[in-house]
Each structure stands twice: as structure tokens, then as C-alpha cells.
Length: 318
Ligand SMILES: [Mg+2]
Image (cartoon, rainbow, N blue to C red):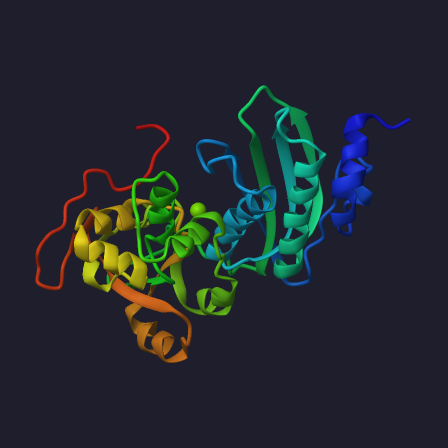
């Protein structure tokens, strides 16, 4: 006899299950990496009211949860392959919500070529909580760490920075832009930079994804590597929308550089390889500065004016 939890799993999640998941009818799954590949694991928890607002469409909540994990894998040079999902559901998540949630997972399984391997569901008085453990693969020995940058390395970041943080401001009614829909989309649906995997594997001396704010995350990379950094704020890529907001209010740039939720890749390349990297790179990647001897992150403009930050990243513990 099946119980309500098993019914829910069989209805919404079993159709997403991959090889090794035993149709989600067993206690555990197996994972066998492809020959010559190492398995890379990453996990992230999203709490309604903290990491997302909570009233987003369920498919977008599912896709964001998957994508923030895939972004961590990509920063390690690993391609996403599979995942486990744990759900803490409140009474507000009815069958319609679960159907939409599983459709979001299905859509991104297709886009990122990966399968569900297992998970768990529990009831909670709230808030809605979801935790994903993502499984990726990287050629053996080629995982890219945060702690392996050297002084003299050139610093790069993918895409544009600040869209998502400003998107959240728009959703909270604290900001109005020329293209609110673009900013909100960037907040709700991160784009893991899987197209950058070959370049990260070949050229990056260290890498991480930007989740808590560019400058604060760079501080973490510097700390792990035992180096300092110099960043030219004028070189940090921003979208036209954020650029037009920043032209009106200098506080917007501070928010962009420290706001987080970008899910772009921040990485360093040895100065000896930087020319070859830039020649090989046809993607949206920007040089923003360099790593130096010492500690800490110094940010200034091209004109040499120092920029100070009240706080360099978003934190649960402030
Ligand atoms: Mg990360």
C-alpha cells in the first residue's frame, strides 16, 4: 500500500528519475562517473523569504534552486549531471504547486542534460525550504579551486554584475528602471555559465561563482589563495539597464558590486596565459583587475579614486 508521500513522489518526481535512482523506490541511489572523470558535489538550500520571495511561480523556484547549484559546479570546471532534492513543504504547496515545480525541474533537466537521483519530502510549519545537492563531473584531477590563485594573475568575470540585486530592489518596490522585466528575470532565473566550462578547465588558476556579491566573493577567493586583489570598478561589466541607473545614483554601483545573486563566474588566469586566454575567448568575459601580494580587495576607478564599501557582501549573520 502506498502512503501519501510515496504517491506524491511517484506522481511528480519518479518521471524525472535517472539511471541509478531505481525509480525513486529504493533507499539510496548509485552514481558511476564516466571513465576519466571525477565526481564533484555541491549543495545549496533556499528558504522562502530569505533566498526567494516565496510567491514566485513554482517552476521558477525549482529552476532557480537547480541553477544556483549548477553555477557552483561550473565554477569548479564541472558539468552538471544529476541532483537530489529535499523539500520542506508547507500547507500552501498543493498538488498544483508540485506539478508546476516538477515541470520546472523537467525543463532544466532537459536544458542542462541531467537527471533526478533522489531526495526527501517533509512537512514544515514554514517557511517553504528546498535543498538541492548537485552532482557534476570534471576530467580527473582538473577541478578548479578557489585557493590556487597567485599574485600577478589576471581577474575576469563573466556576463554582467548587479542585474539580479537590482531586480530584487524592483520587486520590493524600491527601484524603478527602464527595463524592470529584464532585472526581475535576472533575479528569478540565474544562467549558469556552462558555455565557459572548456575555458575554465583550460585556463583558470582559481574560480568561484558570484553568489553573495562580487567584492565579498572576491575577498573569499583572495583569502583562500593568500593574495590580495585590485579591481577597477569602471571595468566591471554592467548591463545598459544597471548602467543607466548608476548614472543617476552612485549608490547603484555599490549595490551592484556587493548585492549578490549574480551567478556569474569570477576567475583568475596566470598572467603568462592571459594573452592566449583572451585570444581563445569568444564569450562574454571581462578583465576587471588583478591579484597582488598582500591581503584584501582594493577597488578604485580608472581615474584612481578609491571606492569604499559599507559592507562587501550579503550575509545571514550580520
Ligand atoms: Mg558559490
